[in-house]
Amino acid sequence: MAAAAARCAGHGGGGGGGGFLLRRRLLATAAFLAAFGLCTAAADDAATGRGQGHDHVMLSVEDMFPDSSSSSPSCDAPPRDHRHDATSSTTRMTIVHRHGPCSPLAAAHGEPPSHGEILAADQSRAESIQHRVSTTTTGRVNPKRSRHRQQQPPSAPAPAASLSSSTASLPASPGRALGTGNYVVTVGLGTPASRYTVVFDTGSDTTWVQCQPCVVACYEQREKLFDPASSSTYANVSCAAPACSDLDVSGCSGGHCLYGVQYGDGSYSIGFFAMDTLTLSSYDAVKGFRFGCGERNDGLFGEAAGLLGLGRGKTSLPVQTYGKYGGVFAHCLPARSTGTGYLDFGAGSPPATTTTPMLTGNGPTFYYVGMTGIRVGGRLLPIAPSVFAAAGTIVDSGTVITRLPPAAYSSLRSAFAAAMAARGYRKAAAVSLLDTCYDFTGMSQVAIPTVSLLFQGGAALDVDASGIMYTVSASQVCLAFAGNEDGGDVGIVGNTQLKTFGVAYDIGKKVVGFSPGAC
Ligand SMILES: *[C@@H]1O[C@H](CO)[C@@H](O)[C@H](O)[C@H]1NC(C)=O
Image 1 (cartoon, rainbow, N blue to C red):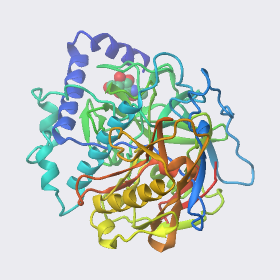
Image 2: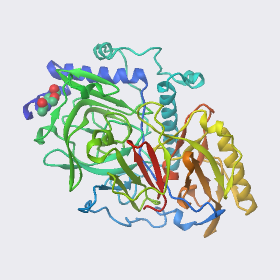
Image 3: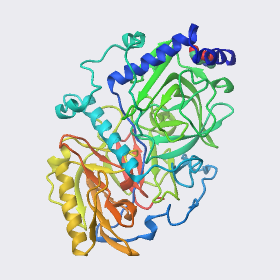
Image 4: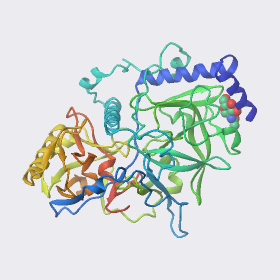
């Protein structure tokens, strides 16, 4: 195995022989992906809420700036070794904000992305999800959106043809869709296990890490690259294995299965589909976990080693471990970037306070729920249920700002702005996609209207105080919701609104649950 890896490495740069062929195949797979314009990307987040009986919550303006109030913010509770008590069947990992002081990826070099960059990246992610949904949902194609897409092929070429073609080109400029606004967890991979900090994503299925020898290209990452040759439990998945056909996009090189994933803006990872031991906690390992060993990767993944796919599709972690954890997992995203949250696998978490059906008729990956209404300041907004039903709603831990159908957003904005105006708050300029902003300069506390999102089955997400506003600066604090351009675009419950909630997914029972104040 070591010799083979070295041979690949030797040929990766210069081309020639098997290395050249492999490189061509990886390039061609990338072209294939680009031609499809496949996109998916997400991470998870949870939000907490306030009682629906209250019409406002108090926010401390100083608390909105955990990162800027001191020059070097510290982590409130540094991640510790994962605990797992003997009586529970749950395994727990610590979730941290990628750019926060608790993150293994924080602080090394460079500034964290600006708010403008985070919001622009969030917009490309939302659009890519909406584009993907509009092309995968049977019978519904959004013509307006399709017209704006350059990478839409008229029909899908067969993978074999694409793999042997060398003419198609890669996206010119990998964007930043995954580089910002996400949360990370640290897992172990291989035997002996090495630790890798990966983006945690409920909006995609296939887990991958960048791999030695990086035949074509790897972006810069903090931890050392995963080296298949130094793991005694590593194995390639063969092209003939049923697992290879579980992939959305696959190829074959020398009998070994190739995978390819591409995210919204052109970020991608391509390489060998492989198996190895995935260590979730020091007490719990998943043997034979299938993941991508990325030999060609690009995009700004913020120095993360890769991505943990938590969608509903066949290759995702919760689906692969169905026999062990029953398709149950939960996450809680911390209110501030100085805090920590958790990612649990297994049914040991306390039951969710409120649950809503997981709707599974819209393709394999995303977690759809049925949104039914919005309350602002305790009052139900007059929005027809058909507004939410038109394109549906997904819960996506990787999207930062919740996206609503245009009619629902304008109703939310009017009610919110009216309540803020009644309290005399000054409006401020819009920032990127956030158009309802306030100037809180000189104030220590502000009272803002409560916001609750309502779902089928009576579930309510009473958004936590930390999840209603997005803070750019004291003079620019914005309502953290945005409207979709088109009523036919899917709604997205994003991670700002999920903060502090335990968000539980049960793939077997098909329910999504929310528990306030979980972290
Ligand atoms: C996996 O496939 C790659 C590429 O063909 C090869 O270099 C490597 O040795 C294989 N690893 C194992 C364990 O078979």
